Image (cartoon, rainbow, N blue to C red):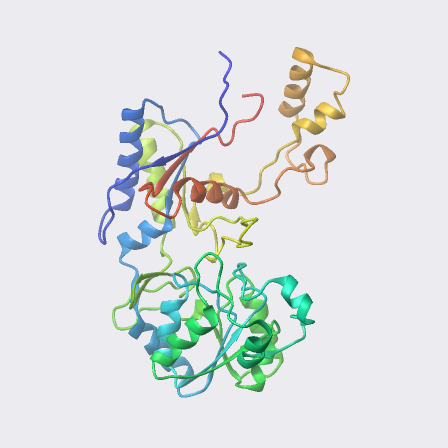
Length: 396
């Protein structure tokens, strides 16, 4: 019987997960209950994914503003700290900034412009052009910025992030100066003790600072890499990937996730006899065309996944084959010719014209993005996603 459906992505509802819950048991039971009640079957190479948020919650991986402040003091002492390139987010960075300011006497806050690393704008490019400002060379003070651009509120949140971050720092009885620049080395005229808060460019930033003479250099993945007075922590990512939990606490990126995904896969095989892939996912890796926001504020899309999700897709473009190799065919002849081509395609199609236009990204980034879009970030109540048929192709 011919199949008419390819990939299916299902958001699976689950109980509200609390600290100490058995995340493996909850994920497996939720998917199997959904399959029984909705009338579908679990198959080999299905993918079961669970969002990092509920994994961290089950682990109790939280830290307070005071924990952050304590680690900042231990690393920077009483120095004026250059806090550079943070993303503009009430959820992602505001509580972290509160802790950083609580652990410091003075902060020089350096913001990138016209936008932060993930696309939240402080000013639009057309306005920069109009004012004759070159964001790659020009260093602006807060006063310069206000004279040029006035009060710019984020179109999605309605927040003036310069004023917002400035007030967070001042409310902690910490002095603050604000600069805008895109060269991290601009901070060194004010202080040589720097906390780099960028996510994906942090290693380059630290290298440039070190070469330029910075004395103390840390990034967010160096903060809370071990427990402070019983706090949560993440040995690999520190504060990267954290979210606001309350006004005074953050939920950290989950740790020790590999046993979780391996446990999910083993449990499905034991209960169903099917080889199921599993992953923990966070932010998807995609960009909003209107807001210009790149979604990936987490350090990685997936902190852990089973071995079957390694690598990249190895696919050919059907429309290329139809328009080129088999342009003289149609109907069943065309279908069979393309199917035969796919059955005998090489194991590595890099550089092959038949693969042009396919997505050369890691499987975990593609699947994690699909899962993030499926589960959403609001009130859907589906922290688990079941993806079926992802590894099928036209011949299946």
